Image (cartoon, rainbow, N blue to C red):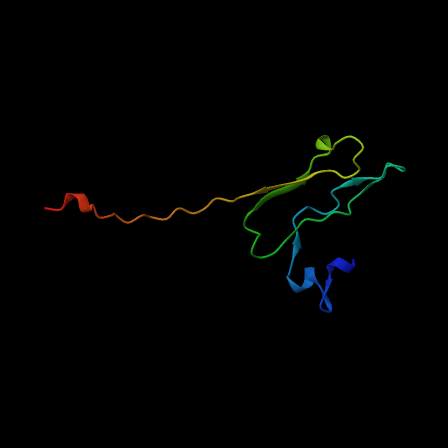
Length: 94
């Protein structure tokens, strides 16, 4: 928890963060007990809320001897195109 603490307050509160991964989605299977838990979080801010399309886990993509489940996040990273103004053709000078 120490890493989350900054300047007398939590980063989540200071930057008004919210959780992108839905609550109670299992992200870790304990090796010994085989219990599923959800210690991992994916957070977003007001600046990034519009680019997150989907956030989920896929246990089928977990590697061998790995306890954590991959968290997959789909982002919309399209760049808006700008209108180009007509360029002057200086080769057509009379």
